Amino acid sequence: MLNLIPNKKLDYSEELSKEFIERGISSFHAACDYVWKLPYGRTSDRANWKLVLTESRGACSTKHALLKALADELLIDIDLVVGIYPMTGKNTSGVGKVLLKHNVEYIPEAHCYLRYQDERLDFTRYSVQADEPINKFFSEISIKPNEIGEIKLNFHKNFIRNNYSKVEFERIWAIREECIAEIST
Image 1 (cartoon, helix red, strand yellow):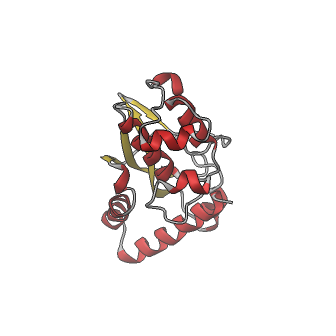
Image 2 (cartoon, one colour):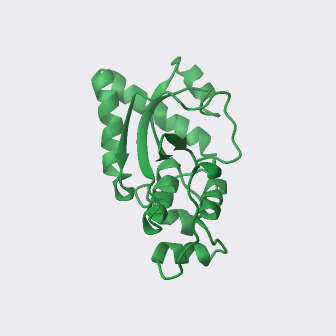
Image 3 (cartoon, one colour):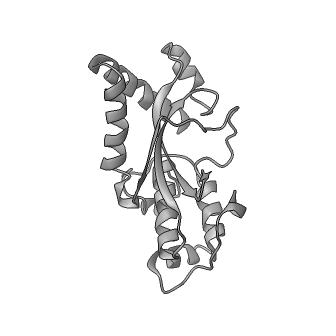
């Protein structure tokens, strides 16, 4: 995946680059690899991507927002994208038993990733292999790193509200939270 994107040396005079350099990381590719290998899990403030480095973990949104911010600092033209996909046990390892318990085929889930040209780049969960890739999206938008909180959440909730009844919305959101808790362990 790294061979699909430009690589640049980090610049010590830049704030975010300096954070990575102080961790022994000297290039954008090495930063991507470092973030990818951090454990999956929400940070204490899921809208604050800067916590990925201090809390040594992150979810799709915080990890990719951090990498997008670093790319911006290095003038690498990469998009931060949030897409709604059908989360199943086959494309998201660890959620199958939750979905089965609730007798649902899938949950519409918001997923953040980077896009360079036409390639999706996912640095979320390094050591986890799913049976199928996440490659079907109902809807996608480009966002800025500071939009992973409210903008992403509203995009996700609005998608579910527009496709399910109010009662179903509450049920789907509760199952979704259970799925996220399951893959965060």
